[in-house]
Length: 389
Image 1 (cartoon, helix red, strand yellow):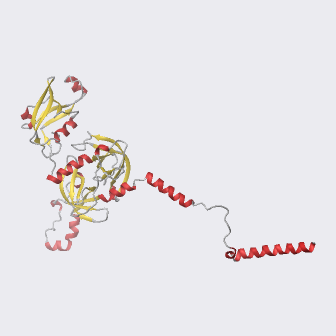
Image 2 (image 1 turned 90 degrees about the vertical axis):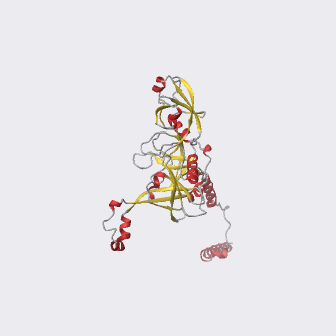
Image 3 (image 1 turned 180 degrees about the vertical axis):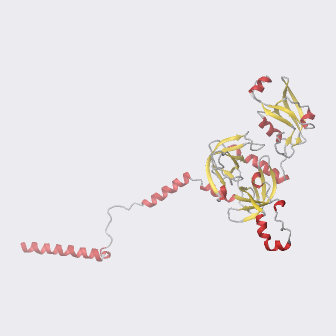
């Protein structure tokens, strides 16, 4: 019995030793051992989860749609003739040094952005971006650069339209202005500080901002999307990649973004752009009055029940207003039935009228309301410090 047990023990020992050797040096001979449980596709589940989060929290589709339509604008301006080198008129001097001194006589004037609004090469930007520029160069998102010419400008809204000789360009889609609301997410696209095309994200903080002293005609979208120098003229888009406004100005004490930026709404930009493309300039109505807002003190003085309307402080000689019989001290209450809330409202209402057409102005005079017909004139070109309407 002891002999059999000894043989069994030796056999088991030899077998275990052989199994160890085979497992160590020839693992393929034993085949794949069954796993202890089903394999878990951890990486696959994580990738799917990441894709879901990416789709819900990203605005990449809107950015990809709009970014090809936003361009960088570089302008340059020649130095004044008095600053030219005294030997620049010498042909021999120009032969050897002309290019060098031409570069010195030219300095970068501004850097900004623009938005392609049609496949035919029309671009909308800010007036102050291209103001006084002698040469304008546009850099497209695909890397191409080309010269641009000015089709027309409108300093009173700070808008300008450029044209490049190219076709089949990607054009921005205009958003429905009536659907913009405070709290909507918006993206600002431009070329801040010249670092290259950049997208920033924020919300619409307010609509209809005016009385800022930036432009003559103000109806700004306020946003906290970062807008910095170089963003001017770029696109403010919604989460579908549609144009909501044209980035125009910032409130800043340091020159950088402080979370308060202003964009010209797409409704105003479209109106100005169409007039410039069609007739080279914007035509606005004008009656020739100087006006100011009604304050509580003025309302009490004129015995008004509301602080609404616009006080006519002056009437220009020979203007449509003088010819119609308007007088200083009259309070403008309505224009063609549209209520005048303040001087800004009055300015926009009159500007929207067509020259040579009649308009009915309701005014308060000596505690009586009068309807006065005025033949609208054409608003003259703006001059420095001219606040007349």
